[in-house]
Length: 302
Image 1: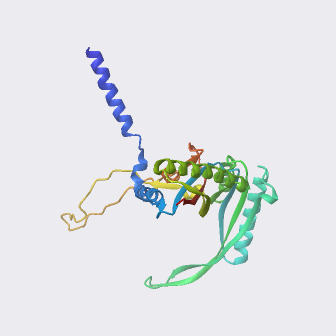
Image 2: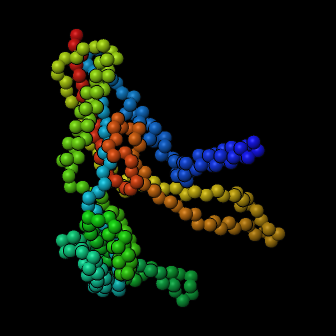
Image 3: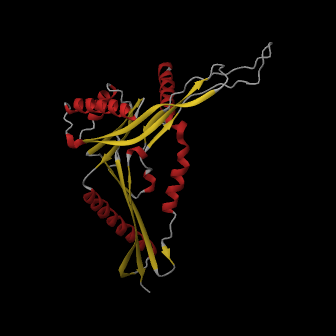
């Protein structure tokens, strides 16, 4: 009996601990929860009956799809005493980088180099008395972006590693793309149409009204949400408080030096509560989210 009691106590403690960790550290950055709540209510608190003449039915469908193509963008810059010097040095680094990624199967048509800016660089020069600092032209900086299209997501890590060998540390963004947009729209529209008629039949069964044969599509809205739009962040820590107005015996004010806190970024899908149907709802990697909203007006028979 004692062993059984201890087992129950152990099971309760383990279960409680597991439940306490379900939310994860993401709760530290959950300020968007209210936004999702209000958005979901904005969709579902809708006018279904328009007087006694029409029935309005709305549907929202979401489709999660993995990308088939990617465009990786790197930023690279170079300083020099003149524009010519900076440009020459920069182009040499870019040519070496492109030659190296060519060994990974990146062809000439798979990348593009885009000139972004050409800036002057200023620095301060102290005078002999060190009491006057005069700002003077110190050189120039040239910045370019390199876009590389790939079809294998695993190639991103390889490109990032090669880029670092040439002093390219700025991974600007990764575009997730698909080329079958017409097929995606057809899939969304077909699913939305089925849901519209199912909801209409449910309303008719509830209200016992009769409808005229004709109807009218009065609203259509589509949206594409890239993974870059779905990343959130949080900084999880617990900190003590201290009185910064403390002075020691020599009347020196206390200085507080804070530790650096780690910020975590994670992918978070659009709230499913906004939609009547989610196609491919289980997501374990960044996806492109396509959505479609339709509103159809059915006319009530008098």
